[in-house]
Amino acid sequence: MNLTRTVSIMRKEMRHILRDRRAFVLVTVSPVFLLLVFAYSMSVEIKNVAIAILDYDQTTLSRRYRDGLASTGDIVIRYWPRDYAEMQSRLERRQAKAAVVIPAGFEEELLAGRETSLQVIVDGTDPSTANHTITHIAGYSQEVALEILSEALAREGIDVGQLSPIQLRMRTWYNPTLKAIIGWVPGLIAIVLGMPAVAATLALTAEKEKGTLEALITTPVQRSELIIGKLIPYVISGLFSAVLCALVGVFWLGTPFRGSPLLYVLLSADFFLAALSISLVISVFVPSQQAAMACAMLIFLFPGFFMSGLFYPIASMPPEMKMEAYMLPTTHYLTITRGLFLKGLDMSSLWPFAAALLAMGLGVTGVSIVTFKKRLG
Image 1 (cartoon, one colour):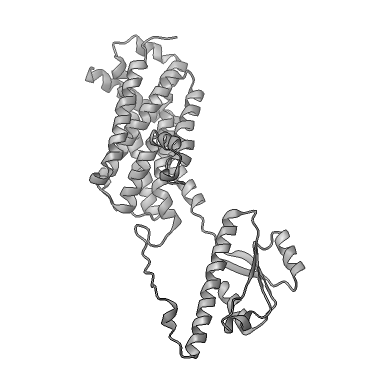
Image 2 (cartoon, helix red, strand yellow):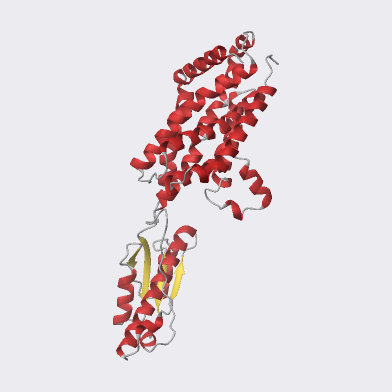
């Protein structure tokens, strides 16, 4: 392989990326745009859920319960129906997402230490809001019941500490505030950085459609020089986008970065080698730009969302699905980005994933070199 010819192909491809607005946007700008869109859309916190309260008890304790229920801001009591029919109407019209019915005798039963019940009716047409509302009401109701029971026992001289023989000391590592956006951003970076790979599928298909590939074939450029010369500029452009995504994630979205920036760049290059090599194989076999981009989207974007471990743990997947997941470069890179951003891991922990990406990149690049033929038709 001649280094001079390879550098010439690299220079030509870099000029193409800078001049072609579509290629430039796909490689450098679109990952940052997608990161912002996905981060904000997936990290929306459910708050101010409108509910209705039907209080048949009308006692001091029932008022204390309903006032506390709305004190966190997660739930807002907007409706006070007079009867069950009015409450049902609020739910049917989607004015309230849930309703709580406080039965008569609520205060009496609790103060007597007897079991009492609350009826909670939730609109299940929006499962996320429904689950959030159920969790909040159930947790708060148990908290109020224990608090009232503790007060009653304390008045009778019984040691309240006997109620909790086990003390749980909870700690949350890596994301102590449990902010959703902090957990999402590192994984989303691994997904959106598949866009440079989508753009790279145009590397050879554009040459085929425009007729410029014929001119390249007539030159002394070898297959390896052509493939590698086209691969490296996209790796460099992708690294620029990876740095932009990291800066946006840290300084705009507030995600911590606890690892080594140099290691992040190095392992991002490893990821781009694996992803872009797959793109070049696609462009070798697919004749048109539209078909090549469609294939790349089906490989990088959609499976990256659902099979890389972003939403569902890979350990819980069936064996055949696990095998497919580990064949995706995004799966390994997602583990790397989460480890670098949130855990501050070093190469001693990340090397298996880096090695998998390197093996994938070198192997698939070799396949693209072997399968690419310097002839038309």
